[in-house]
Figure 1 (cartoon, helix red, strand yellow):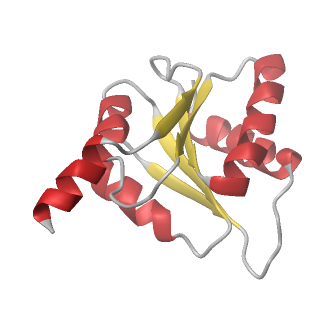
Figure 2: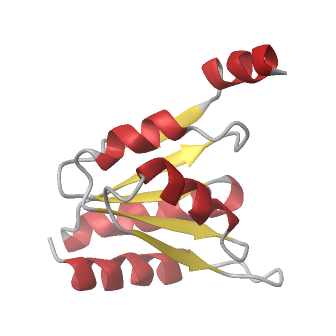
Length: 130
């Protein structure tokens, strides 16, 4: 199993939409919520808020290395999920306390809108500052 894990970890697909600039908010989302978050990111440009999207294509094995790399210069992380926050734990483990990790989620089949995700990022920006 260790060989299989190593192979998969080396071939895990990840999409980083835009660069995670220094002091930017790193938004981590997968699946449907990643597409919603990407729509919110377009609207952020108009507000002058620096943020980038990290979109894991697979969650096992979790793409720790790109998250750890982003933690060297991102201001904080926001996970966007349609769950109770299962991925937020993986992001916290990858960040290893280097930066704060926040959570925005919906459950029960409720799909967040781009405006709700945008509002969560704007609120986070106000909380942590530029």
